[in-house]
Amino acid sequence: MDFKLTNEQEMWKQAVHEFCAAEVQPKASEMDANASFNHQAVKKMGPLGLLGLNIAEEYGGTGIDSISAAIAIEELGWSCGGTALSVSAHNGLGCAPISLFGSEEQKKHWLPALASGEAGLAALALTEPSGGSDLSRAVQTHAELDGDEWVINGSKAWITNPSVGSLVVTLCRTDSREDSKAFSLIIVPTDTKGLHIHPAESKMGVRASPTHALSYENVRVPAKHLLGEIGQGLYQTYEALDGGRISIGALAIGLARAALEEAMRYAKQREAFNAKLSGHQAIQWMIADGVTQIEAARWLIFHAAWKKDQGGRFTKEASMAKLFASEMAEKVCRNAIQILGSYGYSQEYPVERFYRDARLMTIGEGTSEVQRMVISKHALG
Amino acid sequence: MNIVVCVKQTPDTAATISIEEGKATWGDAPLVLNPWDEYAVEQAILTREELGGKVTALSLGPEEAREALKLALAMGCDEAILINDPLFESADTLIVSRALAAGIMKLGEVELVFFGRASVDSDSGVLGSQTARRLGWPSISWAAAISHHEGAIEVERMIDEGRQVVRSSLPAVISVVKEINEPRYPSFMGIRKASKAEIPTWSAESIGIDGSLSPAVTWPEMFAPQVKSAECEFIAGQSAQEIAEGLADRLIAEKVI
Image: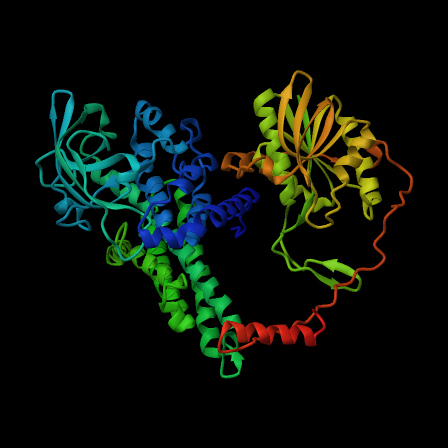
């Protein structure tokens, strides 16, 4: 057992941090206020390797290890929750299924432009207006083969990135059977006729990340856009989500870290009852809890990432890490507001934004309740 | 084209400097690649991208300076060399320039040498010119733009009076200002390469420098300037005229006017 980052990981952490501090963080408040996407910063991420975290070197990606990927998403989360969410979804949800299940031809065709950033961001469409947690019931969007084309009809909800990307990997019913083999993943380019991307949702947090409802109206894509084998879509989805959950957990840690840094800065400078806030035990305890919880969450995330790189399933580890990190982030951000008092509640300081952003982490890519279902199923057998 | 970029490891510019027992200390502030040198590294890489060849990053410093060289490699330099020897411990720029020039000669067939305009710690800004003098090559400082012409270069210098365009033959030594480019961020692939790279160490002897070196410039004492305290006084009044009169009276009383 070795708890030390490698030299490569240390350098990567430093490099991503510097990039985020210079290019992402300064715009975070403005992007949140206007609910706008930071095109400029995301464009610069391609050459660094931030858009190819789940893509092998031979397809233009980084072939990065999962711990380094988590490090990068934590730094992004530290700098802007919304931008981080879009980049996390691009890598973990949009690119990962193509990397994991795509044919050689599909990988060569789609991945290089996604890794470089030329093709914008990728998206994964699972949830529908009537449900998301129980996908096997909720997914009604269906695809039928007509000659050598899939014809897709249906609608999706709460989809990250379609307006800033070039493709949406879509989970469709491809069979009328009533079991988990009725689904398949199909690549749908965003400029396909009949795919309607509805206006961005107005959200409480992660506002720099565009979220849309989608309608598929006789959307026709070539049969070769099917990912992997027909009927495997649900299993593929769950496998991709395991990786995505590590990423959301890492993002939550970044948000908690940003909130705690702000709270500590304030506590060291603000005075009450003839002492700095940091001199009062009530505040010290909140800080101590925050530092401890962040560290604990990070080890859970690193462990899940490590397990992922060992091969085999890491479902339980990813769920535990995501559950703990996202709920921890909400608590730490809540306490940061408490430490800053009225200033914390004001938009003059960023901690209320961190809190709003953190709130999504216990919902997106599997709610806390779903994570507990997964974990208890593993524990109880 | 063989290109050399000379770099230094310095404390982070956000570091708080304090003086302890006559010596400047940065506490445990992180050490970074001298920010000015990032522009030199970027220019060296851009030049290679335009003309082909190889970029070697060269640094004189302690063992830790390897980290700065690794960053230069991660940005895209092909090779890095550390000149490190106990002989150079209290070196001034005259000694450092001698060592760098010797290193450049040892590399051989170098046509262009880049420096940042100064280092953020000692801030002397003379090392580029001194190294050029040691090599007997033209020195071009304050470069803000460079264009290449068959065996020669044209450089736009940013000087106090404005912009000056000069031409020089090669080889030459150029120190650059930040207006020249926007340094790239190191990529993951660059970092992977850098973390695996072997960075050779050259001793004083290996570059032909031996015997004792005595610096011409020493720093016998260092002290923090006294903090000047200032008092702020608001002059109140009902009208602008009244405030202005009050201000004039105060200035006269203080013998300022």
